[in-house]
Length: 512
Image (cartoon, rainbow, N blue to C red; front, side):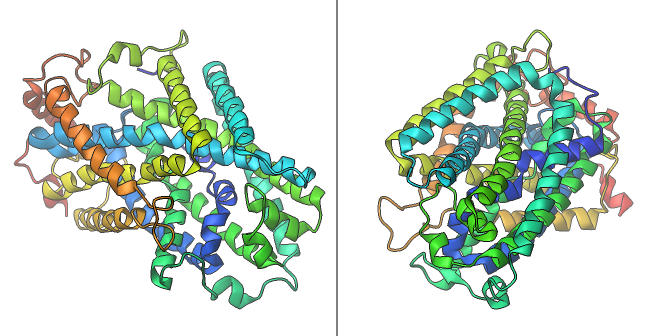
């Protein structure tokens, strides 16, 4: 167990969440996708629609996390909500899908940072066109930097997060000011709010959905803070507060960035055909009308992106550490080994760095192959949420317990859970849409294949290994490699202590 408790309060954790996701900074690095599949109207309205939908999911997770705060996050929540009969299975598939997704996502964030760094160099040296191997070298440098920074600097994460959050806010306000000042006489209201641009080859409807998928990637799954329960004071109260700060901050900053960016454009075609690795460089150049100004703005974006990626990797380590503690993975003792200070699971950190290196080698050989793997991550996250919400709906919330600081009435909690399931079904469909038409081997979206493979792979692991070893309650059973024949009895006992009296009690129905 990670021993870094009592490190964050709810406000600090909320700032950590905004820095961790850094949605507007990440959006500046992935601007090209949204520009060709809907343009700024889709980006602007999509930021509000997707922000609302992810907030409903976050509202549910805030309630579940408040009732069952733990480093294992969604894995433990799914196990609790599934009850004695289905809890272990729900927890295993949730943790399994999310662990598979975690394998891919750090490399994607590092690549975005690499593209921003390479764009800095291109702005100052316009004749230089970065080759893939050069970006690969930047990737390796950042990969090593994050290993060193997390291993030796985790104890300073608290004040680093506060400084980064303050810098992020100042940078964001300065960026809005520059973009807003440059918007006079630039783009029209219709261009920003009405004119849909579709360069995908699909119909406008499908093109808009592809643009919406870019917004979904930018927001990402809203569950990361649940894995920080071991690092906060009073997690039952702190987690819901921090999640609300995360959602409000992300929606506001992304919406404002897109509006300001849309009005700052003076040459749309130049933005689409730019040779900069990150189109944000061309946007800032048009806004400031100088290379120096564009460099300064982009530099201010790069710093919070670098810090946010470090926070993101730290949260990934929490997720995998919590899942490994359940006995679901082989070599559990090796995976759970901590540094001497008890703050960082060092072997997991090294493993993430090795996976990043291997994925970067795929990128070096084939950019298409690299994007195929990374685009599957959000699909795997979405699949991992289904056991949580279905368990809550099918059991009518009877295993939620009543000890959480944040509670919703049963009708509201059930409505939000049903809405979340419908939204997740739509996201799975959208994530599988090919980005361009006509569809070829090069531009095919293989996310559906990875989703099916993930389901088959986890099912095989469950049958062959985890069914007799997966505990699902790392806080109740220390030797997670033992046979859990008494698991149902343990759950029933835990429910009694948590305020439920067994599966027949309709606790929420009595309070609704």
